[in-house]
Amino acid sequence: MWLMSKVWIACGMIMMWLFVGCSPQVYHDVPRKLGMPEAELLVDGRRITIVGQDHQFVFQCGTRQAWVDGVQYFLHRPAGTHSLSEQDVELLYHALKAPPVDASSNILTILLDAGHGATDTGCRKGSTYEKQITLAIVLEVKRLLEAKGHYVLLTRADDSTPHSLDERTAMAARQPIDAFVSVHVNSAGNSLAKGVEVYTLPAPGCDGTAIGSSARAPMVGQSYLVMATRLALAVQKALTAFPGAPADRGVRHAHFKVLRDTPAPAILVETGFITNPEDYTVLTSPIKQQQLARAIAKGILDAFAWSVSLKDSANNVSQLVSVTVGAMEI
Image (tube, rainbow, N blue to C red; front, side):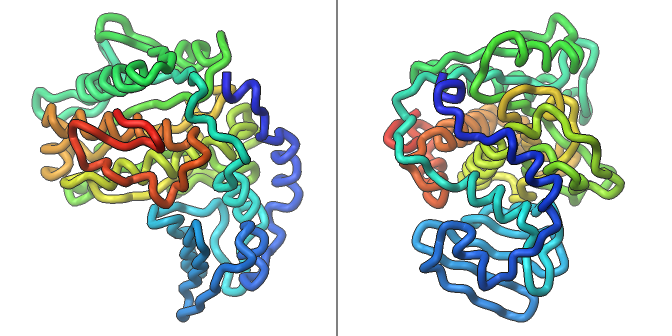
């Protein structure tokens, strides 16, 4: 087990975040804190850009909106006029820092969760149900990961039996896993809403990105937030890279139960809006479903292939037959 044998996530970081989360890091110190002392700091009004050799960050003062290597990312606390929270700086530094080891040859154990199922149909449009789309995508992700020699578990392999959220998180607790990836389809009252999102838990003491998503007491999943952040960035990067891919709605944060109670790095992927005509076309096309699955598989493998920069994680994802994943192809 890669995660179990290379424990680089410091659980004590949670307590540190609880106490220093609001401590400011002035922008001129941020490049050094991100491990990029040579990076160039550019200020354009309320837009702060940090350009380094391996990574680029853009922060919008007064908001939580940011971009990490071209991927939209929502900070855990709003960017200040002169500084970022130490909580966000520490998290991004550790999530993007690559330990001096190549994990691409390690066998991963991944638990895939096809959202909803059986009588729980999820969202729908006409006769198309979320549960059908998520299962099709997850089964393809499983096939791709297993073809590379990795071990894949499923919370459901068909549509015959309903599985509660408690049962899904219990599966993650029964045996050590390297990551938990839950796949869903979004919906909205406004048919203009479109795009893909990947969710992690909020950092301790922080609100979710949705209005009214208030901070909660510390929870199990926050111990794995560093790796979950790296995983979310890699998956979001790949999901928005292929031709005709849904729009980039960013890496966001929510207190979803499958993220709260999973004792492993966990993300929830919203693959598009069934209520948007463009996204609906992607979600219901077998070819596009394969592309979505390949992107998710690629993101998972890229996140664990430390020798590959996230900046390049979307290379060749547009190829339907062959997608480069670090030094591997799927």
